[in-house]
Amino acid sequence: MIIFTRTVNDAQRLSIVLRRLGFPAIPLHGQMTQSLRLASLNKFKSGGRSVLVATDVASRGLDIPLVDLVVVGIIDRPFTA
Image 1 (cartoon, rainbow, N blue to C red):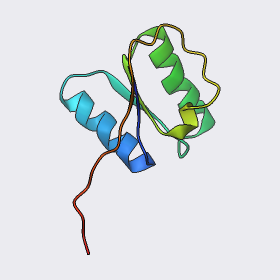
Image 2 (cartoon, helix red, strand yellow):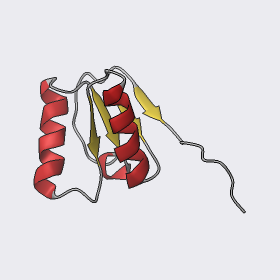
Image 3 (cartoon, rainbow, N blue to C red):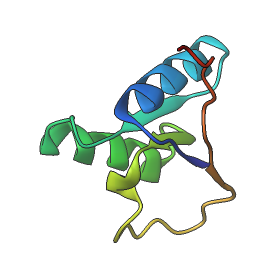
Image 4 (cartoon, helix red, strand yellow):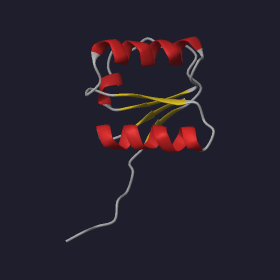
């Protein structure tokens, strides 16, 4: 499963929440170094992590066969004035 989030913070937080709930999630976003992004991608592709939580950095040009589900999510936040 790949979950796309709107922001880096959303990707980080959602991957942490999912891991605490027992889902093997890993983040992928533009504030990670290239080596960390590749490591995350390789863990996901190899099956070491079954949930990739990503920003638009992963929406272009990835070749990941056999992805069961793609979720484009928006995490709502309370409105503050």
